Image 1 (tube, rainbow, N blue to C red):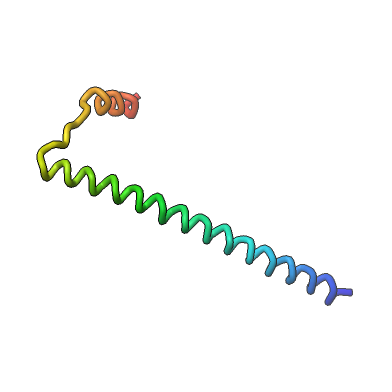
Image 2: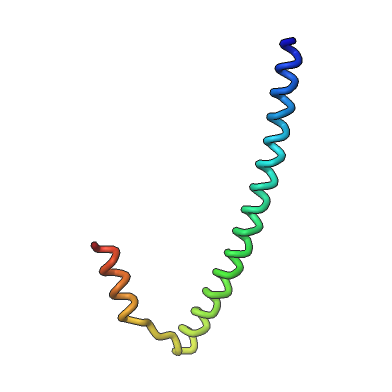
Length: 70
């Protein structure tokens, strides 16, 4: 009887491990997509700065700073 209990517990542990691995893979894929999106945004900002076309929205910036200070 002890071996049956231990066997079923081990089986569930392995099954849960597989589920966790699949969830981790999904998270990694989502992270990669967001990193690519961030990188393209960064590249656009870099190009704007280099060409001299980058403008800072001072109103939005000051509002965010004020929110952080409150």
